[in-house]
Structures are given as structure tokens and as C-alpha cells.
Length: 332
Image (cartoon, rainbow, N blue to C red; front, side, top):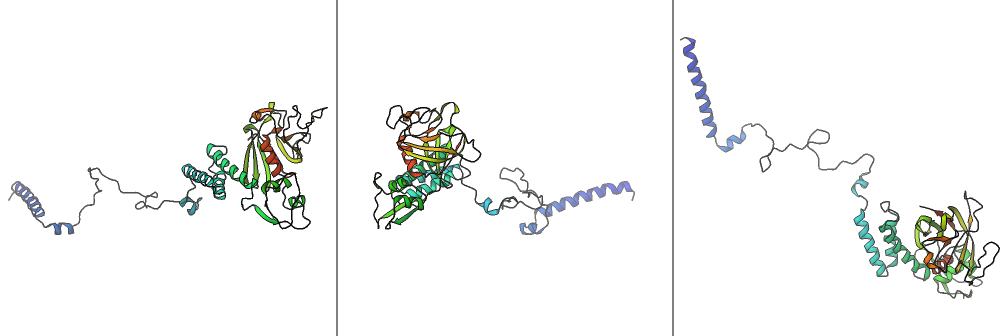
């Protein structure tokens, strides 16, 4: 048979084979179909769009659910991020509630954590509220015999004097009298009585541009006091120490002595004289921290260069800090 007779027969045979194969496939049982090898296809979303298989950051195998940790960050740090602002706000609200309930130490502990957190911006509204909580708690602690970790109970012995006890505990006679509600006009004490003495490691920072005096006990903020400063930048910057303390001071401008109580005396009820130390210009003498009879000038630049406080505030500071307390005056 010639080839041109064979070609149509071959074509008909191929078509018939394809048809029979399709017919046989469509009639196979489903169980048998599942055993036959099939080509893998990408999974479909419900709406029919293709979904790419997950790819790991390295390009090998599917991506794992476990987060990666930078080699410079410990796993514990990555697992426990520091509190965010919302959490700090919640903590502060708790501290304020504790203070309202007279839970002094609990309130102070929470507020201190906020103040000393690296996430808290100094002098932000959050910082100011936390500092206010600490200031209010410490005002109570320093003015009463309320218990605190910084306080020691001392039993007065025969031969003791208030000045000797104050020196032993690096505090002041006035501070002991204030905390124990003793008569500030009398130094009489009685053996067997118990004194509650606050032992502080005091230092002062004056933020000139913020009209603010900050009293610290060691590394902890203890209390904030608003202050007035010298006009025309007359309050010097630098490091000083409290060199003198005078109750009811006379004012001695050049060539004059104006006694305490005179209307021209601008020093108020207390004077804490400053002495320059360290690298500070040694000629910066005659400056001090004092009270004022013009409380409206606190928070302004109105003095000749000294740092002025309201009389109640300077009275308290005078009682707390001993001679030798370091004082830093800075802008920020």
C-alpha cells in the first residue's frame, strides 16, 4: 500500500486513541484518580487568585513563625520590650491613686520608676506629674515621723545633744526637729525618747532657664522648688557648695547693713550662702539661696543674681540640707 493511503488511516487511529483515553479517564473511580500522580499547582484563595508560597528570609524553605533576633540584642530584651508611653501613663495614674489613698511609699516607687526610665523625657508633662507625686510624698516624709526606708530610729542616750546626733547622721538639728515635731525654739531632748531621722545624701541642681531648684537624695529626685533668678543673666553658672546658713538674715549690700525685718531687706527668712568649688571662677562670691517678701517674683528674673524662693520653701530647704551640700547651677 502506498504511503498516501496509510497517512489518513494513521491520523484516524491517533484521534480514536485520544478519544478512548479521555472516555476511560472520565469514567475512572475517584479513589483511583487520587492515587495517580498529578502536577502540583499553587493554592488558590477563595476568590480564585493565585497565592505565592511563603518564602523564608534566606530564600530556603518556608518562612518560620519564630521572629528573628538581632545578634546585638539579647533574646530576653527582644521578648520583653520596655514600657511604652501608654503603659507609663497607666503607671502614673496608679501612683496618683496610691497617693490619694495615703499609700506614700507605693506611690513614690511607681513615680520614681517613671522619672528614671530612659523613655521619659525630662520636663515633659509626664515627667512633671511624676515629679509632683514624688515631691508631695517626700514633703510628708520629711515633715513627719511617717516611716520610710531612709529613716533610722534612734534612742536618745544620756549626754546626747541634738547637734551631736545631727552630725552623726549627716543631717541638721532643724531637720530632726521638723521630722519629730520638736519645739524649734528649744534644744531640750530626753533620754529614752525615740527620734526618727531621715538620712539623705543631698545635692542641689538649679535649672536657671526653667526657674527650678531640684533637690536630690543620692540619684533620686526628692523635691522640686520654683525659684527666681537674677535679671540679665546675673545668676552665675557653675558648681558651688553651701558654705553658710543664717536664720533671719541681715542684708549687706555694699556699704550698708539692713537688718532682718526692715522693709528694704530683700532676703526673706533664710540665707544659704554659696561658695564656688571645682573649676568655677573663685571670684563668684556673695551669691546665695534666700527667701523673699515678694513671692510673685518667684518664677521670674528679678534678683541681683541670687536664687530666691518663697519663704516657706526656703525654710524647708534650710532645715533639710547641711553645710557642704553641693549645688550645681546650669541652664539645662
